[in-house]
Structures are given as C-alpha cells and as structure tokens.
Length: 156
Image (cartoon, rainbow, N blue to C red; front, top):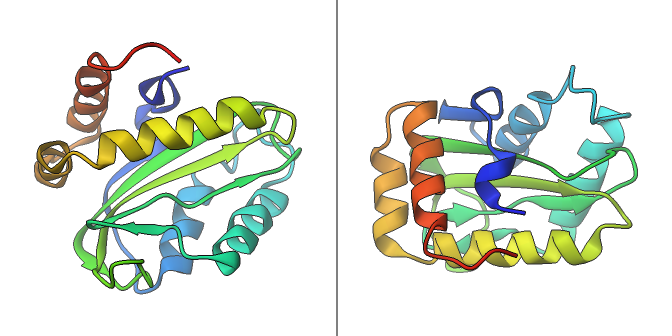
C-alpha cells in the first residue's frame, strides 16, 4: 500500500488551523465523521491521543505523524494537514510543526501500519519534499506531490 493511496481530497486540509497539537489532531480526525470505514470516531480519537501521551509524534524537521491502532476502523485510514505558521507540538527537536500526517490502523494490520509509518517517515525526511509540501496551495497539489515522490520507492 502506498501513502498516496490513503490521501483523497476530502482527507486533506491545506491550511489547517489550531493553537495546540490536540486541536489540529482532532480536526484531522473529524474529517472521518461520515466515513463508512470508521465504526466509532471517538475510539479513533482516543487511540490517537493515547498514543500521543506516550511520546510526542512530532518527529522533527517541522513534521508530525500522529497515529494509533484500533478496531474502530475496518481498514487503514490517513489524513494530511499543513499549518501555515506552524504550532508548538512538543517535537523531539523542539521545533514547531507545519506538516501533519494522521495514520490510523486496524489492530490486526500491524505490519502494514508499520510499513506505512516507515514510508511516511522516509518521505518526510527529504528536505526538498517537505519544502514543496509547505509551498503547496491546494489539495490536488499535495496529492500530486505525494504520488510523484512515492514513484521513487519500491512497492510495499
């Protein structure tokens, strides 16, 4: 599965706003309110926020990957948001976060979940790719950037 397979326009917020990491995470989770793949949105929210309490998912370089696993979804779901000015996210490097990729996996799809987390991390580790995402103005450009960048990776 590719990261770009998860991203649909309705799951992208190109100008995400919020004052706290909890607020922006909740806005991304709320994108799935009427999604048939989600059986219980509050369980999804709980899984992601509980994981965040263990250790910040602000991995550095202006990027965060809040994630969790729960049987409240019937397949892996993902969303992406870009914060224009960045927010304090308790990142590992102490820097603010502008790019957030939310990933929620099903409890029995651990291998795919871990592979997707790894792929997202590798993509976001590329300075040029992050810069192009920060400059992207709309959902379509963001999807195109992920799709083009993933062409450089072997299929999972």
